[in-house]
Each structure stands twice: as structure tokens, then as C-alpha cells.
Image (tube, rainbow over all chains, first blue to last red; front, side):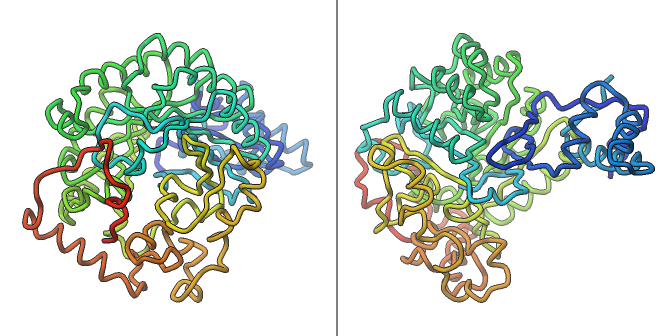
Length: 95
Length: 382
């Protein structure tokens, strides 16, 4: 992971405006559509993306997901996934 | 043709995720590597607006997601905006693949309003002189101006460079141009040799040294520019020792509809003789995709011969390109001769050898895309 892809728990991220994120019925999955590409997301990835693009901080989303899935602490998992998504250009840090 | 950077991380579940519609074979440019058939002018019976809309609806029902409007030059269809609007309503991610000729600020705004998501604009050189030599028309200044308008209208944009011996040495200048235009993606699409490009192969194929230099320049620029510019680099497969995973497999995720309604597993498939490709005017798209003999001919692995059949890489590259196997070995079910394991690899090595010998054996003349070329001319094997 390059340094510029690193994220902090207090960061708020948003979807890259050139990417479209939505439920696709025939695939029974959420997909990301963008120039020259399609990515099909698993349920965990989709629930993180769905929540973290509504204006809340990464930490707040992690807390929400921890509660929802009854897991002790998901902050590291959420942060790791978002850093990958950030490196791939799916999301960017909201200024 | 395989797309660079096609961010595919899924098998499509048997759906034609990628739908490409060639609205017309007409185009004012004369590119000597055009992917259209050499006898393009014999296909004049273009689908009507109503017929294309029917294709779009049927494609979505089959699970298509990415939609490419291409040609020929799709801007020559005056119903383009109407078709984009319908595609958006149906839920496609819409891409326009254009030379920029016929595109003006008014039509761009209309396309934006119709919901078009992305534009891929071709550029052949970073100066007027070479660009005109390669496309046969003085359109360089227009292309640059329209690229700026595309960005000003807020479209994400891919600048696509068809790469040959003629322009590969402009790699760095083209990267600078793309950065200056502010495009998100730059695609160096080294030519793949079918149809018009095959006719001009001896003139167009770059040398190994040119290719290595260009790729090194691309890698350096990637480091320098980071996320500002994503650069795709499609290698000319002749210089690889393994074949490309062409179309992610025959009839796997790609579906092309030609201007006359012929359904094809890729834009070049019609060059394989002896396959009866179905037409959307006569058959439902569902039957065409799932049931038609043409789409099942090379689907999966049952058709494979040795060395593919027992190869542990067959799930990775699907035996390569059926069109290339047909063109260079005479049998579309042979292993793509690019593969070092193919008994026909010597054909490729001889072609590369020809490129390495410099100007010897080259005429210095390009056969520009034009009407009236006999169909047989394009079918000559390598």
C-alpha cells in the first residue's frame, strides 16, 4: 500500500463521482460500474461502501457495523477494506 | 478485442456483462488499422432506432451492464442521443467510443442530458502532421478542442491511442498531452492484427525495442503521476509468449451487435469462415446468447485440442483468440499461435523477425480504409 492510500479513522470518504454503486438484480449483488470496468462486491464490502459514503467517519461506520454484526471491533477490517478501495480509486477522502 | 484494464473480477454467471453495439460502419476517417470488416461498405442495412431499442431491452434482460456505443463513427447516427437516453433508463453504464468527428458542444450537452456516463476519444499522434497521415483527414485540432469540451462538460474520459510503429515513439509526448487535457485514463492500445490492421501488419508492427522503450516510459509515468492519470498498456500479443485471454472466453461475457444486427462474440468474429452468426432481426437475443450454435462453438473447453486441452493455463487464457487461430493457422479451434506451446508459434516468430529487420520488406505505404476492397483481400493468412 502506498503512503497516499492510508486512511485515518476520523476520515470521511466519498465514492469517486465517476463510479456508480448499485444493487444489480440479475447478479444478486452490489456492483461498482466505472469506465472500462465492473466490480461485483460481496455483502461485507457492499455494506461498508453503502455506509461509509453517507457522510459519516470511518470510525462511526465501523462502530455501526460492529453493533450490527455483533462483533467486538471491526475498525481494523473496515479501515483495511477502505484503504484498498482508496488505492483502487473507488473512494476518495472528503476534504 | 480484449479491453485493457477491464476490471473484471467476476465470471459474469453466464451473462453478457459487456454489450457493444456498432451503430454503423460508416466513418469519415480512413484509419489503416480499422477493426471493421475490410468489406464494410457491403453492410448497409443498419438497424433502425426501434430495432436498437429492442436490442437494448433484451440485453438488460440477459444481465448486460456495460454498454459501448461504437461504430464506425457512432456520432453519424442522429438517434444516438435517443438511444443513450433509453440505455440509461434501462440501467446500463453507457460508454461512447468515438473519433470525435461529428461531436460538437451542442451534441455533447445533449448526450450529458441523456445520461451518458463516459467517453472514449481516440487520438493517433500528438501532432497534426502524423495524426493526419494516420487517419487520412485533418482532424487533430478538432480532436484536441473536443477533448477539452468533453472535460469541461464533466465526463470521465479515456484517451485511446491505437499504437503502431508510426506513433509508438511518441509515448512520452502522448502522456504529457493526456495529463494536460486532464483525462482520467490513457489507453495505449497496441494494435491487434485483424481486418485492416492485418492488411497493414508489416507496416504497423513495432519492433521489440520500440515496445520495450514505450513500456518503460509508461511505467515511469505511472510512478510520477500516480492517481492523477491511470495508464492502460495493451501489449501487441505477438510479443508475448502466452496468448491474451481474448474476450474472457468465447461467449463468456462479451456480446457485440454489428450494424446489420449480426450478433458476434467479438467485433472481429465474422472473419472466421464457416460460422453462421445469428441476427437479431431473425432470433431473440436470449436464444442467440444461450442456444445458438455460433455462441456455443468455442464456449467452455470442450472444443479444445492439444496443447490447450491438457494445459494447466487453459482456465486463464481460454486458448487465446479464435480469430487469430483462424487467420494464422487456418483452423479456429487451434491454440492461438502466440502461445509458445503452439506448434504454429513459428508463424508469429517470422512476423516479429520481419519487424526487427527494419525497413527491409516494407513498402512504406499504408492501405487506408476505403470502399471497394475485395472481401478476399482481408482473409489472407499470415
